[in-house]
Image 1 (tube, helix red, strand yellow):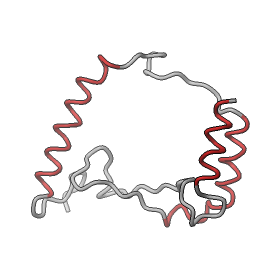
Image 2 (cartoon, one colour; image 1 turned 60 degrees about the vertical axis):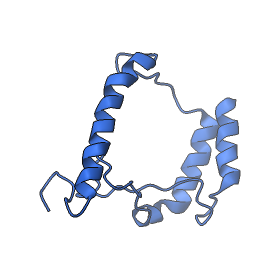
Image 3 (cartoon, helix red, strand yellow; image 1 turned 180 degrees about the vertical axis):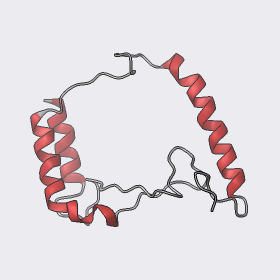
Image 4 (cartoon, one colour; image 1 turned 90 degrees about the horizontal axis):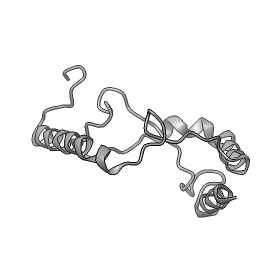
Length: 114
């Protein structure tokens, strides 16, 4: 496999090229549609204490599983270099994890509104 480039077997190269075209088009189009809050384009705030508590507790219960939850990127995706460097995520929505599922998801949303 060529370092830094996605595999080129079969139609994957076409998927990569199309995804890259879409990404570039979005980069051109999106700034005109966004309202920037800082020089970096976002508003930085502290995580509300209630949200931080819920997420921190969930992480402590499940952190040993994060390398088991490889992210699934669409075929041809070029946003991250997942073909050379896999990415991992633990979703609070995953009901198979301790404390995970719709209950904590709703609790996080509710705490964020406070």
